[in-house]
Image (cartoon, rainbow, N blue to C red; front, side, top):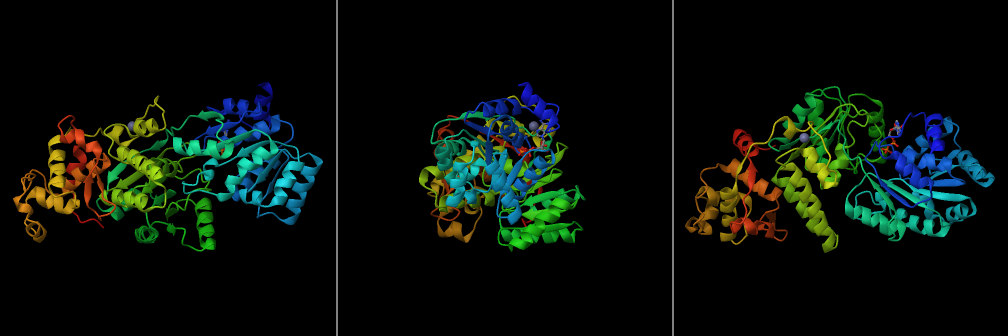
Length: 517
Ligand code: ADP
Ligand code: ZN
């Protein structure tokens, strides 16, 4: 492909393709239907821009991010490529110019917001123009279950059928479920040529920590990185305001961001973050898509994300410039309970809920991983050839011990109390605590009563948290906080398997007797 190499150099100013780009460019240029899954910052725009120049006619690019579309159009125009956009942000003159270029047949790339497809006029216009390729950016927006769902994305399949041209879909969301949904909705179920690779972001350091006093944990993480741009993700809107305030009190430049704010305030926060150095944004997941700041130096999670996918996307916003970046994710039993109940109480059909639990389990497995986080994370995306050396577990290997006996005692306490109690009461049973509730239920007479005095409360909490992390027990959605055993625990109970637990989180629990904030 000398043509492609020449365009790469002369138009885009790059010496070489990045890993994965060339194969995708070749397939798209050849007119194959393509699904390309590339990590954020991997250089996907080139994978449809270059083929658009290699092919006859015009390429329609569907993207949900107006600001990014306008940026791309501007940079293409600067290097002499005939590109235009139809978005709600256009001036009438801009729109006229696009229509004229389309009619004259000179336009090479036409960017469109998906909302445009809802207007019948746009479909007609595209049918009359010489459209030869459709490129779909952020293709996971077609997935009804993801948090980025855009209803108008469902019209893209219809557009493809009506134009009868190849389609190339791009996303950074790698899980099998979302991929299947993209194939269903955009390609009518006929599998396109798929490219999946390069999910490692070697410059991002990965670390998890059990949540003891989240506010001070986040504050000390941020203070070690004073003056650097960072994001703190929180599970609730109220918490974003609290932590942002605490950071400001500690002398940081910090602002909060969530979906409940006025649109104008959100835009202002985004603009400040984009333009200023050293600003911290404390946000819900509403903050992120469309933020294109290459030098975010750190991302911290004050609460556990909802899935391994969400985790990957959120930490992936750090270090897009390739320079070292740090992450820290806090997690505790409350997070696990919250995320489980969000799934159970959601409106999704049962099979979807099972998949969501599995994705949460994958994240919990990562949180409780016994060796290299990166290998565990990328293993989930089917990548195996990984070298790390940049994660907390490579820095300091976890010390593990045989936790089989402890876990069996805990399971026994759960079963002998008919799976009707939460960890707090179960720990009272195990440690032989004399509480009103113990007396009321006659639990002092249980064979399990007082069999767990080798650990204190905090240590038992760490055992229960790790049991939740291994999905041996789950909170009962019908009974707030009550733990039920899962089938995964049966082999342990029967003595068929053993389980390793992390000693550090048990020891850390013992060291940290401060009340949680
Ligand atoms: P994303 O996959 O997140 O959409 P972009 O397409 O915005 O990523 O590309 C990320 C960055 O990588 C951009 O700054 C782009 O100019 C740069 N880039 C893309 N391809 C190459 C390449 N072959 N060589 C060098 N830089 C590249
Ligand atoms: Zn590692």
